[in-house]
Length: 293
Image 1 (cartoon, one colour):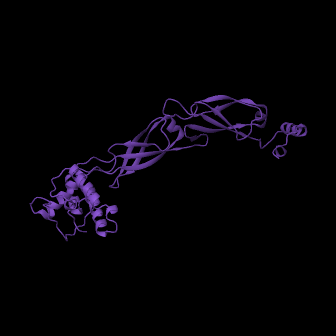
Image 2 (cartoon, helix red, strand yellow; image 1 turned 180 degrees about the vertical axis):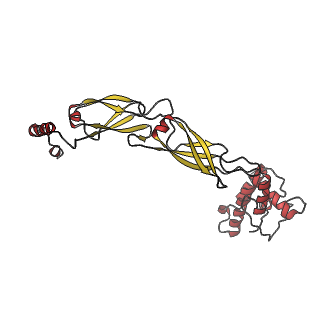
């Protein structure tokens, strides 16, 4: 593409202008060639594109310096940049707001570049996340060597939260700092407890007579156990919420423990149990199929 004289496009006679002067020149040029004032004029349409392009580069101090540096090194031959004469027909592999590849490489040799961050993830049990622990993980470096890290997982970490190890990412260049290592924590549920937000869910198994008559049952939480009242006639699938027995919420409190009732029927009955159930079937008027009609 043609390397354009952005200063001349904005009607500026020299590169030694302030950002405010560039902004003022842009406003005047944009107003002069605005499409609403030049309806159907294709030349004006192309002109406004060049004006926007020039402003995008020159209005940012860092890209302006790069642009001036490239122009001076390629075209000015020791003279002041942008005397008002425009260089035409010069083709460069150029970007908008960045220098060409040769200039970029030269700049990278001078400026420190921070290394890239590295991300990985590990699984921890709900118990370990609740109580906190130190965990060792091994990762492959860019050279292919194994490196072991000790990760301190804080008590009550959230599912999906990331731990940052400063300086453990990819190496920097030209004296730049190393990148960081980010470790995403995935909390795994187990057979007894399931985490949902700050609440912990568990199952509460009851016998048919406990569900029918009501009782007091012991429910195990992640750090202790508690006694709860079971009202008579409770059904499978109903939930009993026990406050402040769930997961840490990061504010000094805890979520709830939610116990889901599951009424269990014995698979094998003694002789007396069979007689009792038979007697119950003879005297009971309860019919769940009929009640749901």
